[in-house]
Image (cartoon, rainbow, N blue to C red; front, side, top):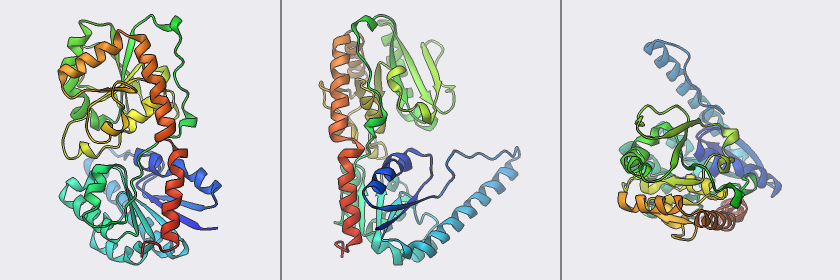
Length: 355
């Protein structure tokens, strides 16, 4: 039985969960022995100490523990046939890069964000792309960067396990009531993505009856009182039940180098839940959304206003797009669709086809 070591950023962040952890049961069913070792704990950790000095000491202790974990992985890496490297391995600098050099020949480096846009991040990602046996970027934009340093590339998009999502049941008897436009994401991403569209949403709310529903980890303080909106705290166990909270899912993005690297996870979760979507035509959004079939692409305020107004006023269109979106997610962006590609990549590395 081939042995796979999975080193991920954490046990809780989306990149780790959706690009590796959700595949583990299927990899094991396919005959791989998987040992998953996250760099961080399975939950978001915050120091309980009140003082800034105390929190700084706690933080440094945590970083020290991460280094110990990575050193352990180094010592035991030779026991495995393939090493899955998620995002930020070797982010501690040249010492760890040198130490990992001997195992990179059997490593698959996976990344789903444009983390190379920063100076430090660019050096790390470049080194990993140059030295990994294989690279699996999450979309074409990320692959274009990786191709500067290697031709051993397989694009594996971020996907969802559609078996865990119950699609929205469209019933004509449920067409009455306030329509809910939903946005889901981290509190850090609200600023560059959702906030620029609030004036448009306020204007639209004067013309159409809807409620903005925001799912994030902490209650936003930047949304205006003049906008009718609702906050729902993010919970991992409720992540697959978006069909109960939203009627339309939105994913606005800024057209900048970092956002172009996004892999459309929000859209895929909306689609898996059978929801129609409206999204900015940036990065993987262009590939995931079939315009006027599974959702609508909107590049500016006027297009966003028109797209949302159209869906708000047309239940049949929402239902049709939601059904088509679910179908597309199952066929093109599901774990079952991409598991064979992941297995093939691991087998190439295990058998030395990368040399």
